[in-house]
Length: 338
Image 1 (cartoon, rainbow, N blue to C red):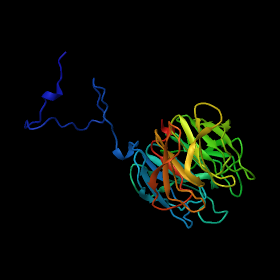
Image 2 (cartoon, rainbow, N blue to C red):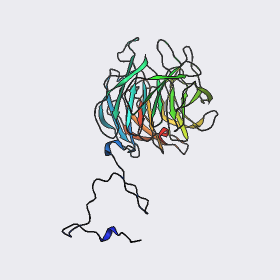
Image 3 (spheres, rainbow, N blue to C red):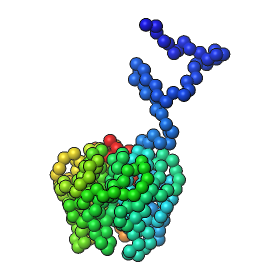
């Protein structure tokens, strides 16, 4: 069999190598596979986004950071609504979704709206669809295809779990129910499991952690308990460890706890945030967990991070463009993506 040596091929005028065009994939003995498709949709750039919230007025700004670096966030764009008092934030490696929230500063104005952004780009959010029920203080988690909204309340506390297919647009569908109605929980995911931890049960709080299998439907199952029983905490994860930080009961706490997502059991102490705070947002990469914003009771612009595989307190990362609470976080490299 003849040997085909590409290093001996030249262009027609012999001034350069070959021009290869019209091929979407390439394979060879070197094992190289050339990527295909628009580079804006390949994902995995290590970006974290923090959404809109209360300043104590209101802002619909979306901030973006590069998780592997440190420094201040920059403006990504604007949400299509000003979402306050908590909402679900979920993401694939290319798309981020914001679902629900309180859209005016008074009870009874919860929204069912879901909006989306393309994470590798910048720009304003676009309409995606609607949750089954208008909701605030719900919490979000996802793998690379499904986004989950769980719980919520004020005034009516719910146990409902809903899901959407992130790559499409459209309304949410029924997934199941948590083990108990709650709002202001923390959440995170591996590629197979989603965890919902803590929250307010009205009256009182719970330290219970539920888990679901993301690609099925059904009710939550008991996983274990947090070290504290806070509401309005924030969760993030890589594919193996889930971290939960901050919250209140009734005063703010600075505790970060962790679990191993593939197992069952109670959370253990990880370290501390820079101070006691609640209503913050979080996102993660395979190596770092990042928390931003919140209040104590002043609205905060702080961004801080930990190395997920170790134990210890946070390190300063930078600052948000606008100090705010309820700036829910998402990323294109979180634990639910593998």
